[in-house]
Image 1 (tube, rainbow, N blue to C red):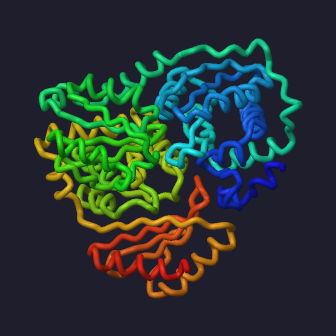
Image 2: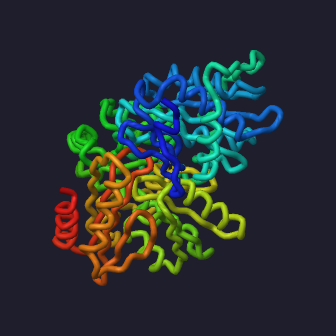
Image 3: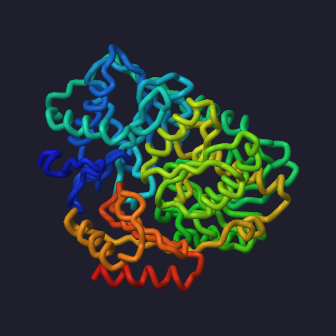
Amino acid sequence: MSLRERGRASGGGNFAEQSDSLKISYSGVRGIVGSSLTPDVARRFGAAFRLLLSGKKPVVVLTRDTRPSGEWLLLEVLAGVCSQPTELVYLGIVPTPTAQVMMHRLKADGGIAITASHNPPEWNGFKFLLGPHAIVADAKQIQRMFELSEDIRAGQIHPDPVSCPMDRNTQAIETHLGEVLAQIDAKAIRRRGFRVALDTACGTGERVAPRLLESLGCEVDMVRVKRDSEPAPQNLAMLAETVRAKGFDLGLAQDEDADRLALVSESGKPIGEEYTLAVVVRHLLKRHGQSRPVVVKNTSTSQMIDDLANAAGAELAEVRVGEINLSRALIEIHNQGRVGFGGEGNGGVIYPPVCYGRDSHIAMALVLEHLALQRETLSQVARRLPRYYMLKRKIRYESEAEAQGLMERTRQVFAEGDIVQPDGLKIRFADRSWLQVRPSNTEPVIRIIVEAPKRARADELMARITALTG
């Protein structure tokens, strides 16, 4: 079966159609190992990425997460990349943001992170990173790789025998830690002496996050549990129980490749990943208030961010879902000589002085700095944030037609609202509530989000949408 049979290109940047096909989008390539994600696919995309880079001998950084399939996927994608002369740097098992920081340090031309991030364990995939800003490839670049891969056959790929990867694992971790520590008041955090429970989902964060926290004077208790990678509240029961039972100050939860962070309060309550960005934005607005910063968020993120930016007199920019859209917006802001930061409501914080990608490590450092300087608990900080009620649901779909049908029914049923952003379907209402129905970029599901100032209104909106799903 060809890649074109497995995944279909479309202008929206989401190239997959069938539930068992590859998900090829501006989030990279993801598939079910041994089904849609095979050695043939890995080699062909590795070779296509090398062709995309062009150049006589580009520098390419390689890394992977802790999924067992990553070991053989690395060998296959490596064979594809080495189909032409390449200077390879292997970082080993490290977080995706560590790879991005190291790419910038090495002035690398490209990078491949073998990871399926928050997807279920039977999945794996590739995040393709491009210099000079070490950001994920955009939809056009992924589309070009998709086209190139169609013209490549794995049997035609012959690795260059002189391409021997350099091992830079230790340097990568030290570089990332140094960049994070340079951006915060470490002494203030050490004086507070936080007691922290850490759940890395047995992922790449286990190699960086404990060292960061210990360097900040924290007592760290590792909660090692094999759970779904996504750090959603329903997956954090053991972390919450540990915080509650041992009287810790807070709990920190990462996803598999450690670019997202969720928080558990001192009472043992997961407060929701939307609060990670809100706490960080509140803190950074205090720090950078005089420069009138720009706060960047995507269309799926809570209105807490809008309210915080407006209250501080900051500028707010809302972009389409997809890390690349946030990164590009922040690069443009930086090029204008302005201060910008932001992220996604899924716990993905982007702070450009460290890197232009989501990074749970700078996120946890900034949360701790905020708690230390404000002399507040996480529950107290959360209570000071604007109050909204957000509900999320995801449902599987079998075809693009099915997803489009749900969005059209939603448009008709909620005709009283205003459609404000062509990102899937997003509708705003006069009472400051909103809903969004959007096919995922990373797995064959439709993501449904509703948010409202009152819980009853959020429940009502979700019930009305759920009734449309059959």
